[in-house]
Image (cartoon, helix red, strand yellow):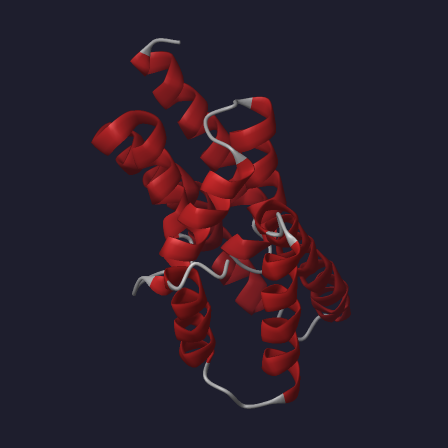
Length: 176
């Protein structure tokens, strides 16, 4: 595939995901992974999961994974196209609908829409977590770490950075 076609594919993919990202960028993670790994074949599932982990560990917006995928696929032009394509459509849509949304802030239909978006967003976030688990749990050790970390996050107030450091230490010691 030529570089222009690849950049066009990146722009189309991330432009579409931008408009589907109701509730934040992580809600489109399953579709992003499906497109990048299964449809386009730009990388493997574990490579995608590694880019996602790197993006989450980095300071900045939580959807840096789009920039990293773009970089991996087409270098600097790919990173720019993926990032702009993910941000621009939803920003423009928000800009043009914000005044109407505010104008109808007391309307019943608006409250109904907001109540309906909550469970949809939670479901999409859970689907993203499932996709990442599927891509990273390749042996029983990784499965055990995933379960322990999930339990620690659910039932304690432990800072996630400590859990990341512990998992990284296990990896450095060759235990994962």
